Figure 1 (cartoon, rainbow, N blue to C red):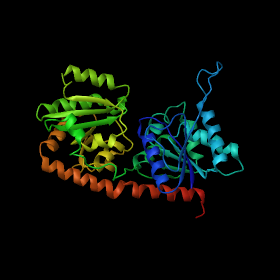
Figure 2 (figure 1 turned 30 degrees about the horizontal axis):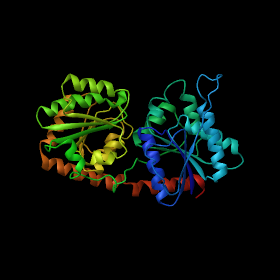
Figure 3 (figure 1 turned 90 degrees about the vertical axis):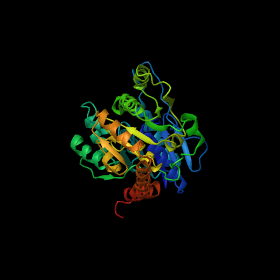
Figure 4 (figure 1 turned 120 degrees about the vertical axis):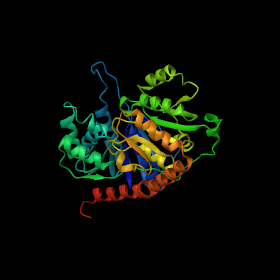
Length: 375
């Protein structure tokens, strides 16, 4: 198949899933065309069967804001016609699925099916905004196929938007060969030369991720167990997390390495991941950690309980309950045998339910149903 993929080329989960799915599909022989205003962060180097098409947006004095939605629709139609695309796959509803609707209308009567994958904030935040709700509902209902990354998000889409179209749940995935335990990796010695325990948090540092809670949890852990914290990523709350680190005089123990291309190495050397989010539609980083045999301490919200088995792969707590999360972290880190058992159970869970070798064929089957609704 020839598949056009549009996503935000940023550090968020939707862009990561879109990019990784494109790479996995290309490895399986499909021709992938990424269409966006910048190359996705995880799309590096020359890759077989993968092409990138940049959407250029002109700035005219007439416009207060560049009309990206229209420029994207034009580029989608142009690439679909020039490259003979079989379908467009839009990750994140706004504005991608709206642009795709315009593109397929431009190409009528040529059929250009559109698949929209919902990731979370496109529904729970953007889609529920009164300014965007009608167009979000329209774009979803006029997609030829809709998927959601969790059962939670599917239910929220129906509740918030009243979407009438059938939504299929296709979970996020992880490449279990790429994400694996690396406890003897040289990088571990760089951060934990005294064999301290390594805790990690990975996010785009938006308020919903509650990165300052991570620092609070770590401060309590450090009082009992020699450890270090890796705060990987960047975003608006990073400054607050850094200030809190200085306030507690944790500078020697907390590292802010920023955005990392080799994120699997940072997770693979870790002992525990902290994900105290206010809400998560799935919790991709938790899954990536599980594949690396890293137990999870996370919030019991959204789609996380569909991924992390409480008491098996880690522990779940109510968001904002810092003391409970710190207690769970100490329970895991204070018993290496239990930590190891949880890590192994987590990896088995990842391999059995969420490995890319299982999920990518589900996308292929979904594409075939969209291309041939009668099959």
